[in-house]
Image (cartoon, rainbow, N blue to C red; front, side):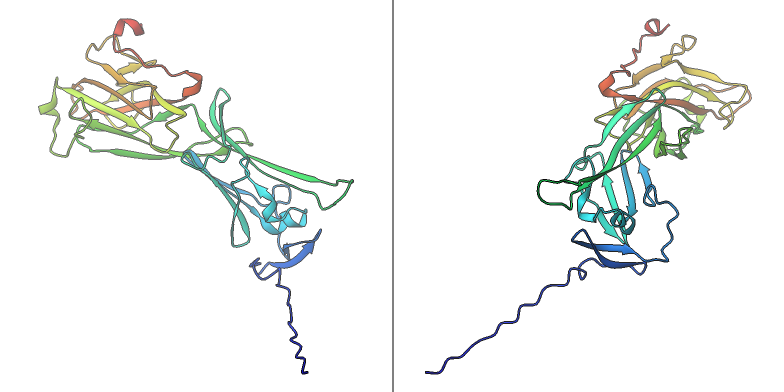
Length: 317
């Protein structure tokens, strides 16, 4: 009888192959886990926060951290997540990038107000325990981060009678070093109709519009409509495109129509990401144009600190 023996060679897979370490990293093992370690000549300008960078845009944010620095401290990429443990980071060129937004990826983000800012908060978290058995040497990490927007914001957009839309992009400054500056866009749009369906076009001229109702909308679409609304604190007109010009006519004062101008109506305020008002068109003496300016206030809907402003002047005195 002839017996044939088949030898099967079993090769272990390379744990470093799928890590894609960058040119300033090398694959290594720590506490029986393989990940990418920093090369000796890798610059470490910020060890405490792992070279974190945070970008805020409306109700979303991206934060990235150094993968190799985290692993040097004993935290492999697979152990890290946002407050919602399902929100893991994505590797991009040696950095672990986390993201949340106001859609279907909130990732445990919370929203609060500190009296001066609306603040989105989250954190990168993780824990590892290299020991097995009755003794634990578990290590934990929490990297908190915030995106903040001032509650009060001046919208100095000059709007003459004929623009369709005017846009402003503003970098919002914070005096609190722990709060990251954030950006959101405001736009002021003049309309011809009370349904806010027909923006003013370039064929309009001020002579045809005198004493006719003029409709204005201030809107932002970058924030979370489920949690935030905007409220017009004040709006006024100037004959030149200078918000603090000495000659001005107030339309809205402290969230209410100017009692000296009976034509002003506040149609929507403090209930959504759009505020709307109207007034009868007028001119300044010796001027062919008017320019509109508003100060906008952000409100948290859950705190109910932005109620609809009545269009009845007597209720706002």
